[in-house]
Image 1 (cartoon, rainbow, N blue to C red):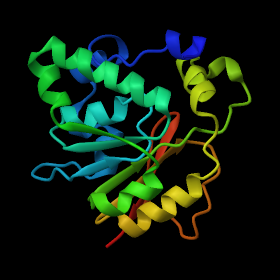
Image 2 (cartoon, rainbow, N blue to C red; image 1 turned 30 degrees about the vertical axis):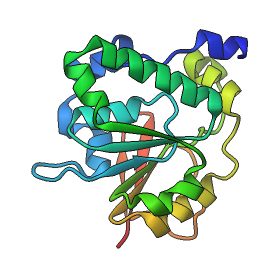
Image 3 (cartoon, rainbow, N blue to C red; image 1 turned 30 degrees about the horizontal axis):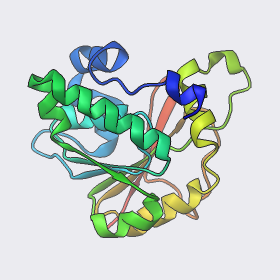
Image 4 (tube, rainbow, N blue to C red; image 1 turned 60 degrees about the horizontal axis):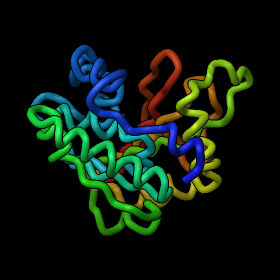
Length: 200
């Protein structure tokens, strides 16, 4: 295992994730709105680019069943470890992890069989001009997974497979990924935007 992977860990129990769980704002958060969580509606979600698992954990904490897909062996192993530690913590954490399923593989190959209502895609974002702004943790993830050169292909596959919507999480000021169609609407945050493609 690389030195970077040895330093990086997936932590659902403390730090930023636990803080967001306590004080994030529930279904009023941009991600939840983008994914279609609202009163009386909790879609089956596929997180096609699981990464550190934080978005999946947030969505599961709001009651959604979330299937995560991760193709990097190292990131997959880190997720397995983080999920096991959260289960061992018990209580609320165990319940949330109970709504999360982790698959290893390429989402382009797996999405067709999952029939997710809403598919979340959060590819590696283009490097920022001011690299000091990029958190060390995200630099570490980039070192492990590299760049996602097939992000447009993944969005296209998701558009064919999702039953209700595909959501692309992308830097607020970055050019859209060319997938051959425009998004239906956007939800804008300070640094992140969610391009929502309604389908079906």
